[in-house]
Image 1: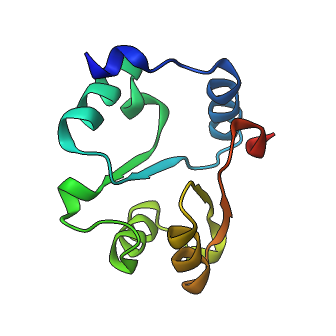
Image 2 (image 1 turned 45 degrees about the horizontal axis):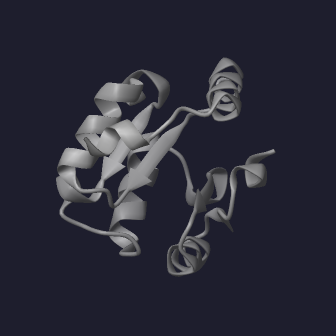
Image 3 (image 1 turned 180 degrees about the vertical axis):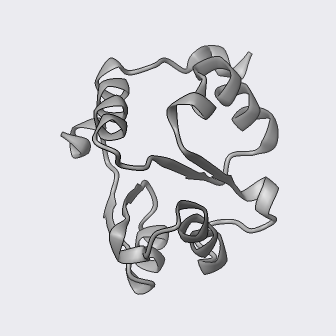
Amino acid sequence: MLIASYQENPRILDLIQELKSKGIKTAVCTNNFKDRLQGLVEEFNLNDRFDIIISSYEEGITKPDERIFRRLVESLNLKPEEILISDDREVNIDMLKQIGFEAFLFTNLDDFF
């Protein structure tokens, strides 16, 4: 099973909980395919941990298309400049910055700490 290869990282779980305890909204915007994302959501209770999950398969739009990021903005009810976002692809970071997000390239978990 593909999902069995994934593990929770306690540092990330603590970070998410800390952000939420401060009233900061948390979200996922992913190009994962349906079965993988559904498996991850179920296995790791992602709907309980994140305020919003935007998926390309549900939206019919894939990153770096600007429209999926606009959907994220609408779902969070924030302005792009009010959102700090990370992605592991430079092309996505470029688009995010073009439309006003505070964005940085994810290279490893230490980027968040």
